Image (cartoon, rainbow, N blue to C red; front, side, top):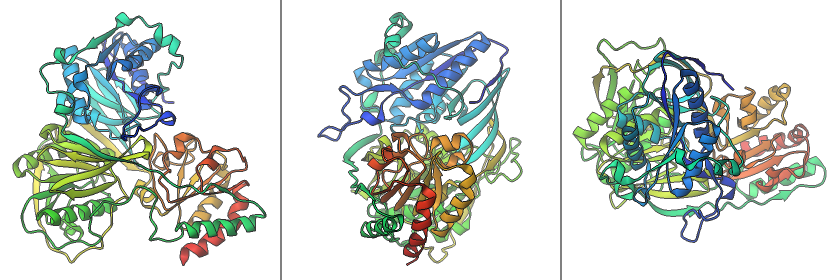
Length: 618
């Protein structure tokens, strides 16, 4: 892990936010589709553990203090107890029945009120996201409500006086950035060794006087909880995925023939089959409708250098706009008239101006950070009052959309895998608990928002160019967060859109990667990896799949050299069909697969790849 370089010049008040979540493997749903919490093992969110550990180092290096803040039911005090046992000075537990039913915006508002009540703080640390819901919305919403700068996905940190030098991990990008205190930071997985005290007996030994309970009444009249939440949960469906679980026998040639037969039967060899559970948006058009000429606006946030994701969002927006008799407006740095052929009826190109401008050479964002874009989009939305706004579910899209939602009081559904319009309202399908369940989320706010996962929406063919009106909106960057450099080491969209994916574990030696990549090219497969593989830099972090990585849903997933522990397989459970290859017959991956080979992956691929190459080409 990284060792932060800390050179503080004064004692700092540090606050770490920590969320209590269920242990995934123990999750169960009741008859009403709700999570059963009775008897469920609960613990601190994995990403939050990094914030607590980093906060402790900074507090000790500066001679300051670390406090931990959690919002939750009475049982959530264990989060504070574990943090104090780890070394934190105090815990604050915001708990009251009035907070029940809080969505991300209501949660952020309660946390912001708590920070203002308890503060000021010099540094607020949060997890990048919670691994149960994976929205990543609360930290940027909190920052916006507190009027503080925000940096997402801190992977490396240096504190020099009042200035922080940061390396940020954004999907498939790396950003070097600078920011001054006070600031809100969200922590990436590999930032630091986590806070972890496993023995509950140690938690129980923590002096309860060091944990202060805070009620809703102490924070003000509210509203709080469900009454303050602009989103609500509708019908929930559990993704029950049928796995054949057939263990192959006989010679490898015979096994490969049988595997092809099973995969053909399941539709895994047909491009029209799709994945098992995360289907595209209900009611969205497969073809782009004609250009809109008026009516309510459907906004789309355009992230630079994400062409395919942009096309998916614009296509969805055009379908929704046609349903409500509206039109599509594209907004973002670098947005141009070419977006008309993909569904935009109007384009607002956001440009940096004023003395604060100054883009990094080669920066497609034009010197603008998320806060700057959110300022423009928020002002536009207040004036226009659009029906809805869609954004990519990337680090960039999540922050921009979260900030806009906080400013507008708008409902925001994160990481949607499907969109529909019902009775004139936006319904977004949201997966949770690693895709075990999908909930239909509705917004009560006038402006409805959603960030959308790449690769889950239809990709309509371009329509005849409609020459949309293109206007420029100039914004003066605030320069509170300054990006020094921006590089991309992969393209996460390739993995999101892949029909065939080969998952690689530590059982595949790096000396065999050249052969593996050649086999992958033969069948048009993308590669992904377990966390251990990316930990040793054998593949980029953008290729990590699992609880703290991506969730993917190819029609065919082939797992090689990996044991199949829950932390990884939860990220591929929505695949159409799964082939597992492992020499250990007792490997957990065989509990998740449709067909299993108990053999060395190289010997299996000698037989399987030529057969797949022919079958997938037909």
